[in-house]
Length: 304
Image (cartoon, rainbow, N blue to C red; front, side, top):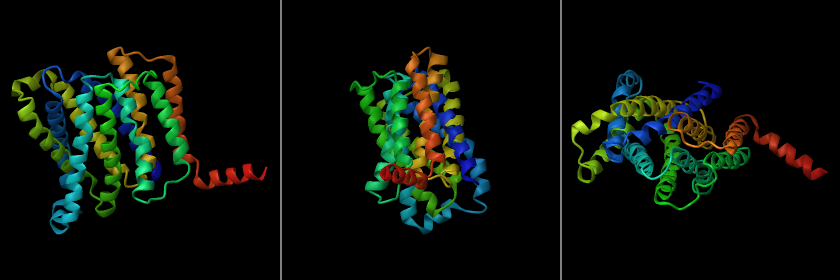
């Protein structure tokens, strides 16, 4: 797969995730956040199973996990970290709107290169840093610029951003060890559903009938966001570095705001259009402006 194709898959993922914010927001009429998380990830895992079984003919994840205990721990970590991110995000949507949640979730964009550079000692190309700044500025404008009040829902989303950053970096690490994205997608989805179910039973105790009224939202979030979105992310991130992937996935904020305005009637002020443009420019910079070009420009400026 070429880098261009991988980036296109990342863009599709961002669109799907942006639309899924609507299902997440409207899908808690009769069940709680853990119930919704449990249902959507269980559905998503089931959808991917046939494709994962086909992939296992070439590379068997279960056999690899039996041989490498460290890989088993890291693979379980994919689901655990995802549960941390989605659990906080889903709960926060009880207290905040879609655009606000999308903006604060996008805080993982600067966190990914920061963690990679400072803690993991990985090289982050120079073009990523201006792209990150533009992405965050664009996401802020999309939120309506009033989203920095430290409300309870905001704090939950901010906490979740750290989990999402860790998830993107952990995906990169695990995929370097075993190229089995479809099986990994099933595994992490099942772990997320399991952990959500463990929390759901004592805290929410839903009746099976409670899931029926929100089945359309569960199906959309499960099939599209989990079954398709996370799987495409795993497939594409084999060919796109984590920091660049984070910038591309920040398009999720754009589509979340647009779908929130279109389907929920949430306000989308004129500044939001500028925010959209900034995020698109950020993606272009991250993917087309090379590190060498930036160095040449800096040298030219210094010689003046």
